[in-house]
Length: 65
Image 1 (tube, rainbow, N blue to C red):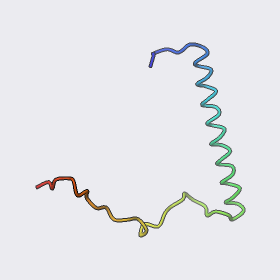
Image 2: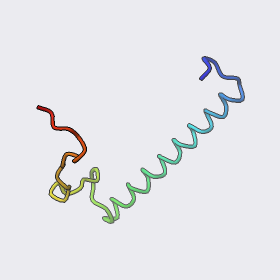
Image 3: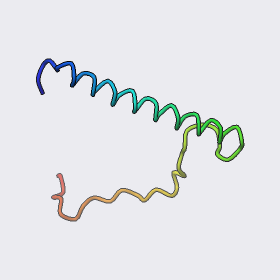
Image 4: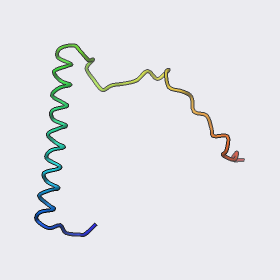
């Protein structure tokens, strides 16, 4: 990657970043509306820790002794 970008490239990068920011903002606003309406629970989405499968070593890995 070059150390400097041309004006057009900087504009494209800035526009892409602005679009990503706007998309994240809209997603946050949607989640906030859903929380206020009671559709989803408040707080970060957490999975049930007991549903996770236990870790098993691969059969191909040599045992470290």
